[in-house]
Amino acid sequence: MVLAFLPKSSSFFDLFDRQVDYAVAAAILLKEITSNGTANEESAQKMHEIEHQGDEVAHAIIDQLNKTFITPFDREDIHALAKELDDVIDMIYTVVNRLVVYKLTGVNKNLVEFADMIVESSRSVARAVKGLRNLKNLKSISEACVEVNRLENLGDSMRDKVFVELFEKEKDPIIVIKWKEIYEDAETVLDICEDVVHVVRSILVKQA
Image (cartoon, rainbow, N blue to C red; front, side, top):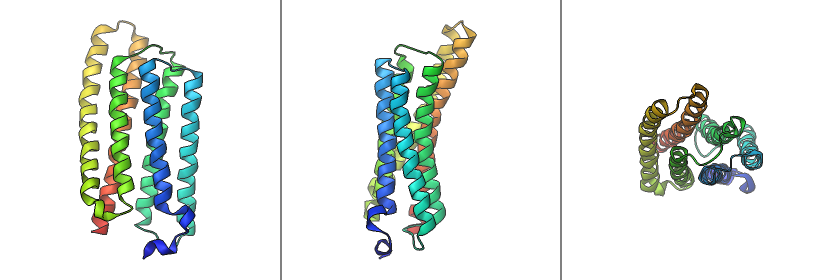
C-alpha cells in the first residue's frame, strides 16, 4: 500500500489534517472577533500566530513532497492543496489585519454574516480534505464540496447586497473604500475555499 512508504509521523494526510484544522481555527477566531467587535492588536496577534502555524505546516508538506518518492496522490495536487489551504488562512488573517489597520471598530452585522459563512465553509473544507484519507468516504466528500460551492454562491450574493447598502447609506468615501475592501476580502475567503474543493475533486477524479 502506498502509505507504507511514507514516514508515519509525517504522512501527508496527517499534515493536511493539521493544516485544515488551522484554517477552521482561523475562521472561528474571525467569527469571535467580528461578533465581539474586538479587532485590535491583540486579536490580530492571535490570528497571526494561527497564520504562522499554518505556514509551518505548508512548508512541512512541501519539504515532505521533496523527500518522498511515492506519494498518495499526484504531486501537483499535493502542492496545490497545500497552497490553497495556506491561502485560506492568509486571507482570513488579511481581513482581521485590515480591520485593525483601518481602525474599524464595533460590530458590523454584514461582516458577522460573512464570518458565519466562512466558518461553515471552512468546516466543510475540513470534511472534504480529511475524507481523502479513505476514499470510501466519497459521498461525504462530495457533499462537503457541494456545500462549499453553495456557500461561495451565497457569498457572491451577500457581497452584492452589502455593496448596495454601503453605497446607499455611507457618505464618507474613505469609509466606503475601507469597508468595500473588507467585504471583498471576506468573499475572497469563500472563493479560495471553493478552490480547495476543486483540488479535492481533481484528486477524486484521478483516483477513480
